Image (cartoon, rainbow, N blue to C red; front, top):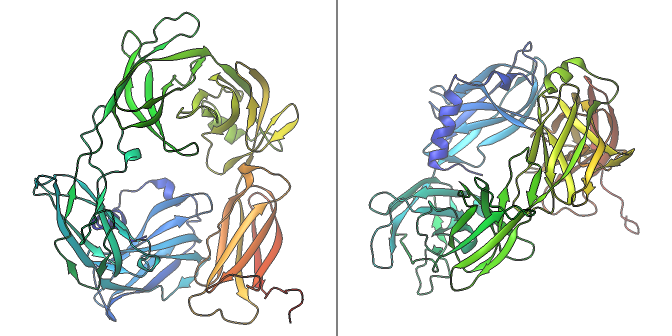
Length: 535
């Protein structure tokens, strides 16, 4: 996705900044001196002063680095002292756009990667004014510019109007775009600080404002008078109620609460107000459009109680006398262990770490949390009934392998009943510092122009969401690297896409054994698939 003007400025500052986190270099070997070089051009000529930087790209994370360079008078750049690893090369220029603003690379030891080039063009401009139905300018109103079709590279940009109600978006890639302002109803409800909203409206050059007009942008063009008129949203209502102790009926003061709006039975949107009930346990929800809602409360992470969300519907008036009753929640306790024996350095860093729990049937509810004891034991309280999912703030290169209860491994979550107290949970951890590095080749020779390789991998032997990986980065040379892997056997699947992907698309599958601290090198050769009954 292309960056907006503001994003581009921020990116340049990031690339040129020397104040970075030291951790950004921890994932790679600093002893190697590889380099990446190339050229940045505008209409075939080198352009100077363009920032080019590197971002670490791994299977499970992405981090910025201070590895960067600025193009010289000929548009050339060279980033030296690059440790081996997986990177995105990022170019950032405020007034220009590119077919791609980043390129993926796998850099080896003492390797000089050359010809990582970027071709820039001048972007276009879209400008206009946003007013209300009486012609008054709307200040600080958010305007969205989005690609009208897939040929516009999924571009989107958000910009706000100035004190005259005028907006001006620049550095827009050539293509067709729609422009709108205002909010959809399900995005327009929020806390008491929200200002009055406006219904979403698109720019249209015809009488029907519900039918947006696509604006065509070409290199260096400027589309003017792209004006939008907004009307007030539907009348807003409020909902009032109390949070009380389900056993005693006493009010629950200083409890955080929020609202959840249901678009349909399968989709909803939550808003946490950041406010708490008063001394009488009373709450108030404002800025509600007609629709179906639920009010939920957020007990502190170590609370031993929970509360079911109270559902209600707004029609044409305020809603009063809502009651949210708390209940004594269930609990889950257990211990964190290390597969293959304890690792002292990891165990020390895990002490006093946070463990988080979420129950799937608690809409809008934030995670419960607790502190892990020095011996690895933990206890989570205030849990409702449903599917209990657990996470831990783990040290780098450590992952959850599985969660066990009574010798049974659970891949998606542990069932828990209302008011149930689960004991004996075992959260099994292991180091995750294995690496698979390889290259994808085409049996028939060089891939066609514009073709792209795809590689995915999955850890076999367990149906476990904690140990499944997909979408491995593959660079333009067909090289790929997946790091931070748990030990085990992985299945690699590779394919090439150069248009329509069908049953005869060249593919390759291979199994690879990974162990901790090792780098496994593989070569995948793609071969056309055999279709029964066809030559």
